Structure formats: C-alpha cells, structure tokens
Length: 149
Image (cartoon, rainbow, N blue to C red):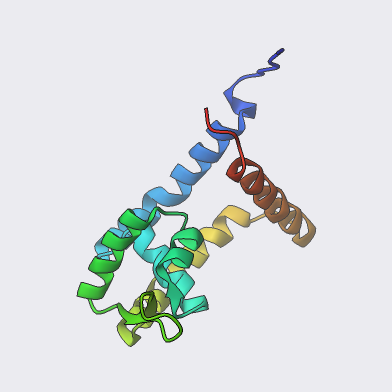
C-alpha cells in the first residue's frame, strides 16, 4: 500500500487533536472553576436538550464509556445537578434528569461555550458552516465504523 503522507499540517488526526486542545484549554479552566469537567458539561448540555435520557443513551451522546459516565453522574448527583430515577417503562433502567440547579449551571456556562464556538467559527459563511458540520459528521461516522487494529 502506498502512503501519500504530506506532513502533519495535512494529517487529520493531528489537525483535529490540535484544534480540540486549543478549543478546550481555556474552557476546561472555566469549567474547573465551576466544579465541572468537560464530561459534566456534556451531560448537562444533552440533558438540557433531552431530559430523562437513559444511561446507555447518555453514554452514546456524550461519547463516553458507561463506567466513566457513571462516576461523572455520581458527582453531578452529589452536587444536586441531576437526579436518577427508575424508568417508568422498565424498572431495571435508570433515567437521568436535570434538576433546577443543573439547569442553572448549564445556563451559566452556556455563554462561555457559545463565545468559544463563535470565536472558532468566525469568518465562515453559513454555507461553509453547513458543509463543515456535514464533513465532521461524516468523518465521525467513518471512524465510528473503522476496523480495530
């Protein structure tokens, strides 16, 4: 197999990693000052959109394994941000609900997250943003079904 490697400036894993690190460095400091991690923020954000998700669905949405998510949920529950309730359809299942304090925390952090988003997306046209999101979603779909080495 021939490899057409042109250097890291055009190597997707490097570009994505470098970009993610730059996006997250200040945001993580802000989150930490508010007693949160990136995973905590993702949980609050997804519950704000879809309250009452099951743990499995939340793990998929937050792109985390269930053990790591379970530890994060314990912290969020201890801090009064979320609540775990038995699933009405299946008593063996647990649904996660955003409590008023969790919604307040989400609303507190959202302007900072949105400012970061706006900063990253400045200079892109609406059409470019649409294409960019489509491309990133396609890359994610491609690597989600990649073979394991």
